Image 1 (cartoon, helix red, strand yellow):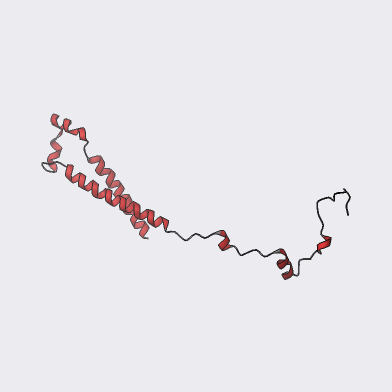
Image 2 (cartoon, one colour):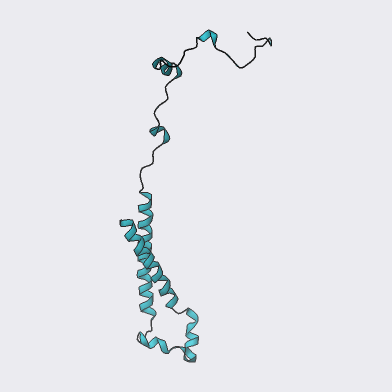
Length: 124
């Protein structure tokens, strides 16, 4: 729930930050103001929109970094991962499992069959 709220704030801040950066004039814009392009700066006062837009951009950038770090922290606090060996029950040895199960026939040790042929080439 809190992660969703922070994500919404993050997206709104991102869009507002892009808009604020696009509204600011570049460093080379003063030359254009000499030819009649400086009339729009009177809306924000004699100093122009520079201080207002700069301060707003700095605040939005700070909020952006805080929400980014918060989302990174919350994404790392997921459910605790466990090892497969913690989940799977330990395997019993063959002799323990045969003794406990009466449906499985027991082959005596001396009479075990093998798929490997005998060294002399003859079957037993």
